[in-house]
Length: 290
Image (cartoon, rainbow, N blue to C red; front, side, top):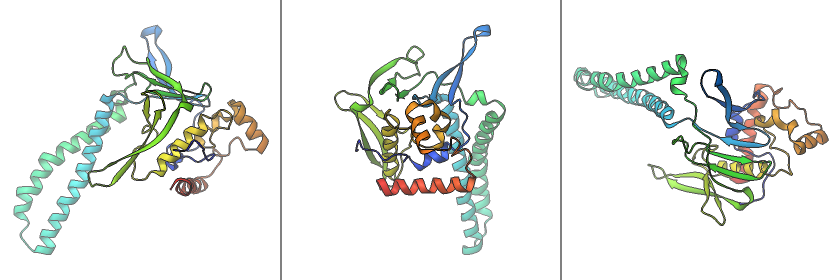
């Protein structure tokens, strides 16, 4: 992908994921130590100097995936069962009793009930015991540092001894952006972004910020975002995510002073206008990268 960027164009998902009103403290804290030595330390963050990324451990994702799968089975399977029952009663005119006793009720008992138990159980734990589900990450995955211009990949934090250890570190300028595609189960294309080092075997998937999707303009917009964010001679992308941090970045602060930008431009925006701005960003992505 091109190394030229269009200012302030980001994936439309960014405006939905990070709406106005963000707390100035955008760190993700975890607790370390025990007793009097216990303290909260940042393990990941998004600010004017760097973006360090971490994610939930695999055990947390397992519970959340099970909950999502159970919901799909309940709603999807329930709809199919109901449609088939309606077809028997109103279209074919057959006696529904055999279908209900031999298929409908067993499906509810042996499939629907366990899925409902999983969904309800995980939801219960999320509400009353969130720490059982949302466990602290063991370490960061990667970091883009606007101040130093470096991209850092950390070792897999699944192993405690590897958590926080640097796997490789290289200047952002030495990476190129790529869009890869692969077929879905239906044979349709699915796109995802990645950045690859020009000279060494170093690569970083970009799906943490933009999941694989059926269009490629979102991934081009994401690469566009990284190009502007990592350009320390240019202001930060003007999106709600960075508004609390704009005054801390000298280049951005000077730019905002020169154009007379309202320091609470996004945070003072009403919901209707913000929805309009979000729609406009999707259209800009399509226009620039479609």
